[in-house]
Length: 335
Image (tube, rainbow, N blue to C red; front, side, top):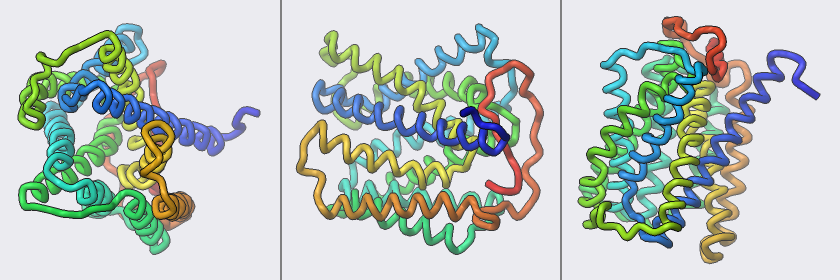
C-alpha cells in the first residue's frame, strides 16, 4: 500500500535514504578492501579523486538532461567546504598510518561529540538527557566492537585531531549549505565534486607516494584490478549522493550515530568474506550494545524536546525550480 499522508511519505523516503547510504557505503568498503588487500592498489587519495571525477560526470549528465537546474554557491563557501573535505580525506589516511588501529577507531568515535559541539555552538541545538545517553551507549558499543590495541604518539595525535575536526566540519557544512542556500543534494554535489576531483587528482599521487612510497603510475594495472577500480568509482557515486541526502535531511550527528550501523555490517561481512578471526563474543556484545543505542537514539531524538533548535533557522536563498531533482529537505524546529 502506498503512503497516504505526508508523514508516511517522509518516513518512507527517510528509510530509503538510510538504506541507500548503508548499502553503497558497505559495498564500497568491501570493494576497496579487496582492491587494496588482494590487488595491492594502495593509492587511497588518488582513488578518492577518481570517485569524485565519476560523481562529477554523473552530475554533468543529469544537468545536461535537465534534471539539475542551475544554482549558486558562493566561491568562499565552496573553497571552505573543499578545504575541510580534502583535509578530512588526507587526515584520515595519515591518522591510520601513524596511529594504532585502536586509537584510529577512538578518533573516529570522537567525531560524534565534536559534531554535537558544532551543532550546539553553531545552530543552538539542545539535546535531551535521553538523547545524550543514547549517544553515549552507541559510543560504548562501537568502542567495544572496534577498539583493541591503543597507543598514541605526538604526530599521530595531531593527524587524528585534524582528521576529526575537518571531517566533522565537512559533514556539518553539507547540512549547513543545503539549508542556507536551499540546495538539493544533486545541486551541492554539482558544485563540490568537480573541485574535489580536481584537487585530489592533482595532489593525490604525491600524497599517496608520501604515504606508501609507491607511484600510482608505476602500478601494474590489469583487467581485474581495473574492473575493481571502475566498480569502486561507480558505487562511490551512490555513496557521495546518499551521504549528502542523509545529512541534508537529518544532521551530521544523526548521520554519525546511525551511520555506525555500517561499521557493524562491515565487521559482519568481513567475517564472512575475509576470515573468521575477527568475530567473537566480545565483538558481538559490542554490536548488540551499539544497535540498542541506535534504536534508543532514533526514538529519543524524534520525541518533542529530544533534539530542538533554540533559535530561528537560517535564512535561505530560494533556488530550486519546479521539475528539478530534489531530495525534499524539510527544515523546522525539530532536527
